[in-house]
Length: 110
Image 1 (cartoon, rainbow, N blue to C red):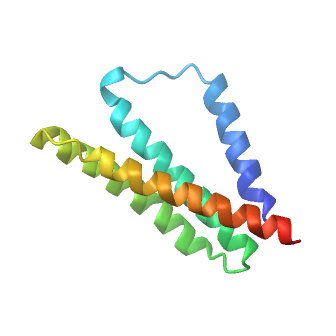
Image 2: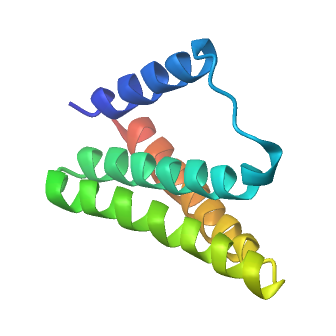
């Protein structure tokens, strides 16, 4: 079952690459934090699946709340003139790498 998030991630990337949808450059900050928040949730879900602690409700609520919080930080930062989206990028980036390291260790132990 741990491969389902990876399959979903690969499927989503393929759809994104083949889609003719383009976002204006003005929304680049929002999209970058949204993608990182989504990746954080996917890797967290994959980790939870490997540890046999996966809960669909927690995964979905985390996915949407993290994405909305990151977009809200970017929006508020834009209006205040402060680069608040960088805080979200650092936090989500660190969490993605931590989850990836734990997943890698878990897979190597098997």
